[in-house]
Structures are given as C-alpha cells and as structure tokens.
Amino acid sequence: MRDAVAPEPLPLWPFTGREDELRLVRRSSAGARRGLVVTGPPGRGKTRLVTEAVRGTDCARIAGIPQAHRMPFAAFAPLLPESVTLHRAVRLLSGVRTLLVDDAHLLDDSSAALVHQLAVRSDTRLLIVVTDGAPVPAAVSRLWTGELLPRLPLGPLPREETARLVTVGAGRAPEPLTVNRLHRLAGGDLRLLRELLGALRGHEDLTPVPGTDEWAWQGPVPLTPAVREHTAHLLTRTDPGERETLDRLAFAEPLPVELDGPTGPEHPMDPAGRPAGPAPLDLAALERLEDDGLVHVDGRGAVRLAHPLHGPVLRAAAGGLRARRLARAPEEYGPALDDEAAALTALIGQADVRTVPAPVGDWLVAEGVPVPAGYAALRARYARLRGEVREAAAWAREGLRTTASARSGPAGAEAGAGAGAGAEAGAGVGAAAEARAELALAEAQSPALASVRRPAHAPHDPYDAVRLGAPERAAGRLTGVFAAHADALTHADGPALDRAAGELERRGFLLFSAEAYAQAAAAHRDPAAARTARTRAVALARRCQGARPPALAALALGELTARQQQIVTLAATGLSNRQIAERLTLSIRTVGNHLYSAYTRLGASDRTTLPRLTDPRPTDPRPAEFQEKQPA
Image (cartoon, rainbow, N blue to C red; front, side):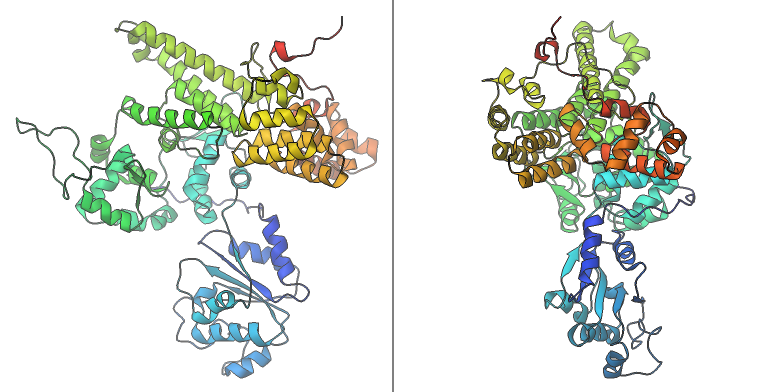
C-alpha cells in the first residue's frame, strides 16, 4: 500500500476554461435579470466561477453552515441583527443589489425561506451555488424547479484547460498521456486534481520526456487524503466477496460475467480436486456492486469498474501479497489489447472516431507497463485522426520505447532462439516502422512538437490531397463524408463545405473539420457565412493540440490583432523582445504580453515555432506524388 506524503503547496491556479459561463453569470445579474442558480458536483469550480463574476462589484455574500439547521438565519448572521422575523429580514435586505449565496444546500430552513422570499418579492439579484447530490431545502430547490431563477449546470473543464492548470501547477507542461490520465482520474473535480498534482511534485514517478521539455507520470496513484475521501465508499467495503471482486477487476478488467456461475465465492475444481483456472466472478457480489454504481456491465457481458479512479486506487491500496496474487504478467493482457485494437480498427473503418474504447491500454501505459508496438502505433493513428496530434506522438513514442526495450533486454536476446522467432521479429520491425511513421506524421502537423521530421515516403492517402486543396487528385478514390468534402471543394461550394465540416466534426475528425471550415471560409461569397466558418475553424483548431497544417496557418494569423501580427512577424525573424520594443516604441513587458497571447491563439509553445507559422509557403507534408512539380 502506498500512502502519499503531505503535498507541497501549489501556486494559485488561473481562472480558465469558463469564459462562456462567466459571461452568462455576469449577464444574469445585470439589467432586468433576477439572478442564477449554479449547480454541479463537489470540486467543479462553482464558487470560483461566481466569485470571479462578482469581482469588483458591490455584492453581499453569505454561505450555508454545516450542522446549523436548527439555528434561525444562521447563514445571514453577518447581515442581520440577532433577533429578526422573516418579514423584517426581507425588508432589511431589500437594499442589497446582489447577494451571493454559497453552499445553499446547507442553509437552515429560515435562511432558505428568506432566500426564496428575496427571489419572489425583492429587487435583489441572487447568485445561488448548490452542490449536486446533496439534500437541498425545498425553498431553495423551488428557485429553479418553480422557474423563479434559471439554472446553470456546470460541466467538467475541457481537457485542454486541465492541461493548462496542470502546467501552471507543475511549472512545466506535462506530456499528453499524463494530461489524459489526470483529467480522467479527477473526473472534473478540480480539488482532487490539485491534490494529485501536489502529491506528485518532486516524486520519483515523474520523468522527463526525451527530446522535449515535458514531463510524464507513470506509476501508482498516490493515496492522498483527498483520494481516500473520494473512494471511501470503495475502500471500506467489508464483504469479502465484494472486496475480492473489486480487487480482481482492478488488476484484470474487463472480466466476463458467467450468468450461470456461482452466487458465492466458490471455485471450480478439476477431477483431481485442484483449482481449475480462475474462479468465476461472484454473481451475488456483482449485483450488489452494480446496484451501488461501482461496476458496469456492457452489452457483451464484460464487467468493468465504473469510475476511472477506482482501479488505480484499489491497485495502490492492495498489499504486496494480494497484488502478486492478482496481478497479470504483461503478456496476459494481450487478449484485452487485441479486443481494443479490433474495436478501434472497426471504428476507423466506419469513419467514426468519437469515442476511444480502450481503457486497458490507457491504464497499462499510465502505470508503466509496456504495450505492444503495433497496438501503440494504432493508438497513435487513432489519436491523429481525432486531431490529437501531441497525443499521437506520445503513443508513437510508447511503441518505440517498447521496441527498444525488447531489443536491449534479455527477453529480446532470447527471442531469436525460439520457434517462430523470425515471424515475431518481422512483426516487431513492422510495428516499429508504423510507430516511427505515425510519430513523423504527428510532428509534421504541429509546430510545437520538439522536432519536425517528415517521413521520406508518407502513407499514400488520397484524402491528404483534399486536405491540401487538390481534390482532383482524389477523384473516385473516396467514399462517404470524405467524398462529400472532396466534391464540395472541387466546386468551391461554401455551404456544402460547411455541411461536410459539420459531419466530420460529428464523427470526431476535429482537425479535418477545422480544415474543411477553413476551406469554406475561402469559398463563401457571403461575408457573414465566411466569418462564421472561419470562427468555427479556429475554435476547432484550438482543440487539436497545436496542430497547424497549411490550411489553418493563414487562419491562425488572421486571429491575431494587428499589433500581435506585427510583433509575431518581428519575433519570427529572430529579434528579441527588447529589440522589438525599441523598434515599435513599446515596453518590453507589453511585447511579452502580446507574444504570450499570440502563442495561445497560434498553438505555439515559444518563438522558435513562429517562422513556420508565418512562412507563407509552408513545407508540404504530402508524398512526392501529391506535390506540384516546380518549373526548372
């Protein structure tokens, strides 16, 4: 069992990723509007959102108090005299312009009634914060069920904003698979994310990624107090059958369910009276765990733990002997990885990459278990198709790391002596080549990646010609949405390009969709339609981890202000901030602020990537047969 030491204090996190919600909250307390109720699970950032919304305004603030239900008007003690009636309290507070009520689910009945009466009878604008899943006084819940105030359910932060918070907390950027892991484990709970990051700072499980300035986390989850609190309902299960079932799933999910299997901890025996393979899962325990929302059974009869945090916590909490009994050897995960690879391949064939049904590969890599190079190359391809170019590069590096370990380790040296070793070696070489090709393709599309290495012979894909503005080269070679995109581009049909881009986005091809919208912006004759397509292209491109193929480079520069374009152009020529400041008669700090904003809009990491973004003739990543021949 691994307990974490007290986490180091983290710097204050920036307010990020809630710009739309922030505007909505501010509008709700302006003009003739009466306010808003913000709801969400614990740790979602509700209080931070409303605090930012009222910053600098004349706003009174109260908060619900735990275990104060029998104290009349306990929450309003800072604003009201010691003894007051409900009617007088309404009159006393009628002059308050805006009232923020935090943790309204903890209000005593008198305070809840007062809040309801203020919503009905006064001109006070109310911003109410309520935690999902907690018992709420009826007078508070009636605020939105009775349509007195609109309700804003607060969703989890996008992965991109999680990455920004983690970068601020750690002081440097994490690699994409680490971001995915932290985002997945936290499940939208920013307090848990902060706790995890604090426990990881300076830990030996954090390693630099070769060739980049990023760091990676591979290893067990630290059992911090916050992690234990979040999983107390899991770790405190006392029924032996339930705990055994949970631990078996933690080390070997997914597991099949045998509906005619035992309803207790029985073990099948062979004719000699010895255990015959692993015991089937205890159906009675499974049913209880499913009722409590701790496990999930899919349509194929495979059972998994219900939350991404549960498996890592159970593995980290298991004693050494229990872990040795339950853990599989790396090669025993082969069938599960084969199933995931088949599912991913099928989705690619169906041109639908919205989901990533591959939890086993995710947690194996997260805890440092090597995965086959062929599997890693497929994950890299899948991520690249989704527009996740940095993640694609990370998966490709995992495949190359596995190949390098196999060659240098003793198992790799012995493999040549076994039967069929030649075929296995050939397959390994082919998988490594696929991983290298995927790494090159991912790096070619992102100026922020460490090196820009393009394959000498990129895979022959006719859709690349469409993406690069030469649809005639793909005539008759595409189907479905890709053929629709090619046809719309051939005819310079802006509305048809919009439709193709929308369908690509719906299917999960975010980078392809951004490129199609960029082409639509150029094809539209209606300026308003062109602006809409351009805005959509830029918004989607920002979700593609810094990808900047040629179709988007010009759009990215167009997003900058005139001053930012001027400064970026000078920085791309190699001038320092001081030199730019002297030339433009600005302060060095102003130049730095403009560059920082430009990096965010361009998806660039630093000034070394600017020349590629500002070059009007970007390097063509197409295979030779797609490139235009230049006259001698």
